[in-house]
Image 1 (cartoon, rainbow, N blue to C red):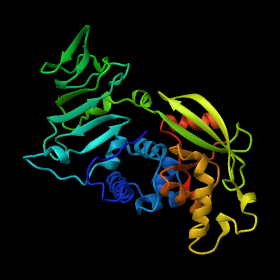
Image 2 (cartoon, rainbow, N blue to C red):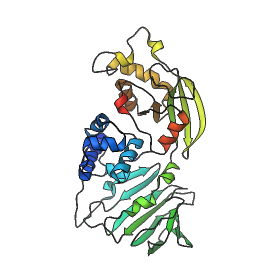
Image 3 (cartoon, rainbow, N blue to C red):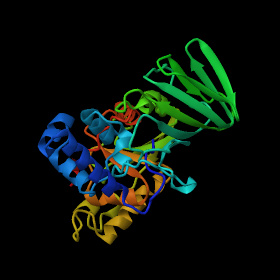
Image 4 (spheres, one colour):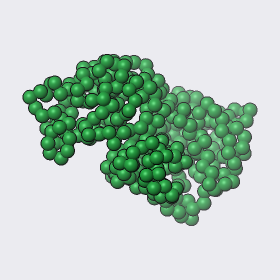
Length: 345
């Protein structure tokens, strides 16, 4: 699952998230040690994230968001600037992606939060979730293209291009794209309480899991347990995920230290730390050739050089203390798997 801003991509996302975490932690009055105790993460891990030296996994962000009592999207929001007038050009909309669906915040810098405007591009089958929600104030929706199904109380509405709907938001409601084509619509909230954030009630984690379609590689010795040593493990278990569920398993051979017996091990090579030199990176590239189609790799232990190599290859590594493969994958899909970068060596 990818959550991040759609503009200003030249700015380091890790640095932005780190600064935001530091800002949110300070606003709550938490010291680094207190946040570590509350979240279960180490002080070292939190320090690396805050200084932009570590890329937190979705699970880590979810865990921190729960402790800080915020939306996970908050980590990607720019520094708060309040204005009485907000002009947003089409190519500068703050954008967040949920699979192939998009949410654009059209009023994030507005000083008053009594109006909260969004633009959604919703893929077929996606919506606000199976459960209805309710909040204060009013809700307005205008269909720009496609077809959008809305339930308000006991009534259902099919909105086509040019149709609109406005209602008292205390009535239980939900929405979904039930057509075979993408739908785009404007969604405006008018909460009675400025501190209320209705959009969080509409975007449930269970619903976002529907959009998780990917391949996950797991380092393993037997196809059942996660290996604790990246370099020595002989296999990858590649899991195909569709709609947040495992639909296929495939064991693939993996190159390891035994194939490089005449060369220094990647994790112990000299020059810039464990496996951080160019020769070690080449070995990591060779190890990753058979999982080039995967987006994530789960392991129980890894050198920092291998970790950084995987990231350069656009494969997100996650170091976990869990051993059971199915349990770890379930936690990852739910956004709850902690990336223990403090265990890197």
